[in-house]
Image (cartoon, rainbow over the protein chains, first blue to last red):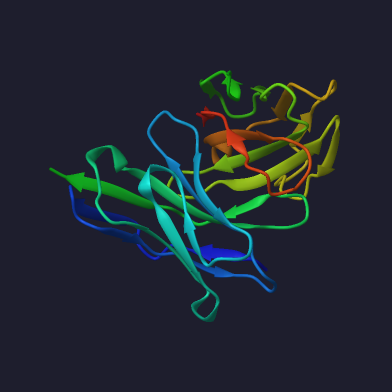
Length: 113
Length: 115
């Protein structure tokens, strides 16, 4: 069965520092992979997605992610974090032909001034 | 334009009661999903509608949960005989037709608390 693991429950970084959030997936075929961000009181917002092709994917708000099939990973990165990036981040994999998503448990990002 | 809206934003009920949670998708979006997000967890899929019909209800935890979308727009998630374990944030998402993996747009959720 498909699954997503986000090993880090909570990460704190200083403003201006680089960020990498880890995501590992389990899926039999070529996966559809997503990163969402959830801010308090807001709905989940799509940051980026990977379907096929170039394994380095650019998203909104300066985020990027790299698909590594050999490591079953899809880590999210940002070169310089801003205070407004503090939120919870979810990695997800496409669960079937209907488009339903299977989410990880999320990583909460705190940003120190 | 307007996004996905959900009402109420918060619902407190007593164990054993019946509740209805409403989702208004983005106009023109034919696909609609319900997810449930328990504390400290990621969203979990409940049910998927394509138009008026429930195309996949494999995520519904038991027969106390039911959802409808009679006119292919607004959807209502219905929970009978609520239990404390049903306490969670219920999320709705919609997307356009075409690829199953077109972007899903999520609403802010309904926080359900069962006392």
